[in-house]
Amino acid sequence: MRLSDNFGRKINYLRLSVTDRCNMRCVYCMPADGIEKLGHAEILSYEEFLLIAKAAVSLGIEKIRVTGGEPLVRTGIVPFLEQLATISGLEQLVLTTNGVLLAEMAQELKDAGVKRLNISLDSLQPAMFNRLTRRDLLSQVLDGIAAAENVGLPYKVNMVVMRGRNDNEILDFAKLTQQHDCTVRFIEYMPVQKDQGWRSLVVPSHEILQRLNDYYTLHPVDRGALAGPAEEFAIAGAQGRIGVIAPLSGHFCQDCNRIRITSSGGVRTCLFSDHEFDLKPLLVPGNIDHVATELQRLVSDKPACHTLSSHAAYSPFSMAQVGG
Image (cartoon, rainbow, N blue to C red; front, side, top):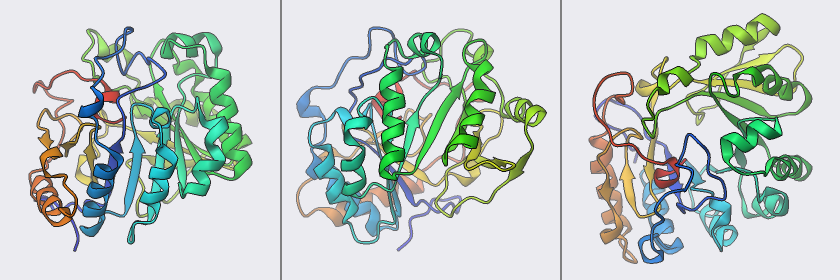
């Protein structure tokens, strides 16, 4: 069985947000004082997440990304990942992290069956890192990246580019791919909190690429079958790759292949949609078929495109609440 929507898009990628907790306070994700945290009883148990994952894989989901919040702050995350990795039919188990706890957990994650990491890192400069994350943790993140390399765990670095803040570091991040066998992905700023004047922060993908092309010779590279929405390139002679993700200036909705499960069991078929279905009442042992049926129904209603470039309304939210 293959999961597809009414627009013929094959849905083979599931994002599971296992917690709304985070040990950073990134400016584009949440207010300085954080968000109102869900109560323990509101967060899905690992058993409930496993039920969803098994139902999704039975429908043809081939890739699961575990995210948060910061997934590594949740107690018991490694045994949960081990269980996910054993689901028959799952091709890729990957994880998104801010890297703070990675130095002590990299080997465990690899042993658990995680195939690749996405590491959020928006500045290599301590002062700017502190400003953007509101935490003095850059050295811990860099140690985590080094640990991932040491244990042979492949990783991508995700940089949200913000004009007047960290856009002067684009070339510094690109240089990482010359020194390390990794992918650096430049992501256009997205107005999840709908801050006033947010458009002034957006550096469109064509400008990012122009800055890179002014300094480097870039060669387009092919992406894998389960790749995300990034255009990918390689600097001549570099070990790694460069990716550019353009949710605003370069709609990739026509190729969207994902659905999201929030930490409380909400299903979002589009990040920028207020429509969220509560799956939690269906999550009882042995109810895989019923959950699968509901996922099929929800995917069939997946919207054709997000509304970021229009004046359509959506409620501001924190990425930690819906899965970063």
